[in-house]
Image (tube, rainbow, N blue to C red; front, top):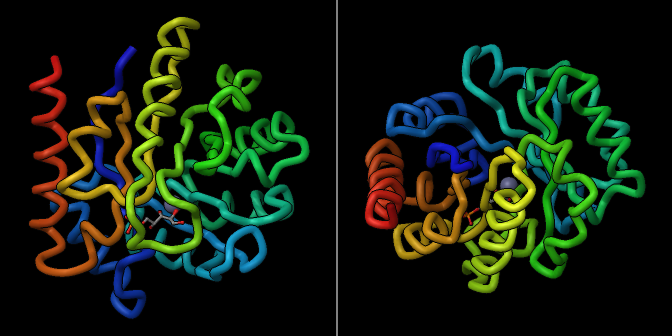
Length: 228
Ligand code: DX5
Ligand code: ZN
């Protein structure tokens, strides 16, 4: 069953010296949740932020869903701290979890919605055994680590495959896409079956943040309307 199409601004591309204000503008423009990219310099070749920033942002923005995308090794070690800091959803990479089922249950046990993420080179079939216990599946449409990269087109097939599998098995997880989501890619992404659209550069990169978010969401929603 299809879910509502929603925009998840990725704060990775925001001005970190002005984080809460930038995030608020993206929400005013129609962002339904905030996507928070956590990188450890090991799982991906970049370092971003940890629980203290999530906690400060949570104080500034009390009511919004924080969709924390952990691009880190050994996520089990850090899930309690992110939950405590105010994460609402926590997703972990299939490639980073030796005991994926246990990790996903651990996220739920800490009061957060569990999500699983796959890199571009990981087939959808790797998730067969966890699709019934996740709240969302995040398909990376770039190699994780940096914003501003080019959308990998073959991700569309993975999104459709997941949407078909969900339908076939009568499951209810949401399908999220992350990487290169922009005005020129968003319609195809939505038509392929994704509902949660993560966008960093396209929202915060240049111009008016509120207006960027508004236009992206509008483009996404009109693609669904045209599709229906
Ligand atoms: C990259 C992150 C993304 C990033 C996307 O590893 O997971 O969330 O912010 O950036 P854009 O939207 O610029 O491709
Ligand atoms: Zn992300």
